[in-house]
Length: 370
Figure (cartoon, rainbow, N blue to C red):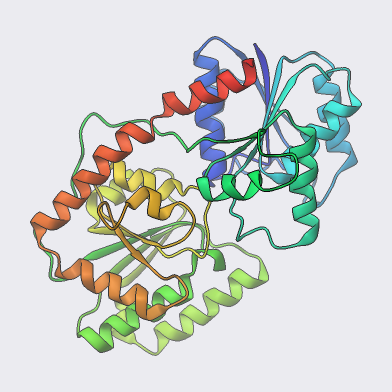
């Protein structure tokens, strides 16, 4: 098949990582794959795409945001060259895909649109209408979480159109347990993700202060992820800095690493990953940590309970309660090295059966061929 993949950019986000895996996987299976970027500029995954020999298209928008007629026309011109399938990730890319197909002579190309967010995260009526419109005009609408898929199936006319495909990952040959299991007295806590309010950083640092004041010890914390520059993210970061300025010892235990290209060594050298997000699609970082043998604490939202089971493969917390986050950290500290290692092993065993990249590529390939 000749397949056009459409996404916003090749930045370091989870959707961009999965599109990279998927485009390269389809290329490896002999398909002719091309990629269109609606907001080119961020190039975190560009080397992987270029190494696979996948052509990259896009228009320089010079910082402009919102809908672009030039982008729509560029996608339409590209489709005029003839494609058998179109695969788009995220709402804006889905919108360009459905409109360009309607306006081009490529109406026969099968269109698979993918939702990468959460029901909780889509709050504006305009965005909800966009989800309905793109879902209506696509051939298949894919969610990367069961919680989102269940919501989409309840929309009029969507019950038979929606599919759920979890993210896929390269599977390591064997688990690599954390090297710090032998030191349970002061766990090294890892956060991997953009510094933005949805990741719930302020409540996390409030929880660290609660641990310090209530339980008498201070977790060590490393945060790997880029600082977002929108007003809400900058305001949250400022509030975190105020909190840290009030606790000099806590501030000494926290390290901000910025964007990290490959977080695998961080998973392997940390005691526990914590993701207290307010909502997620299917979080890459939790899946990657499970595959790396790193225990996980995650918010009890969306598909996190499916990933971690009934606290069999990780611990859950209420993301809106700093006390609940602090309690989960304390419960992890009190676990023995043997208990932590057993939990990490169960998580790894689950991940290698449910999160294989080959399974994800296979399911998308079949949808495009249907």
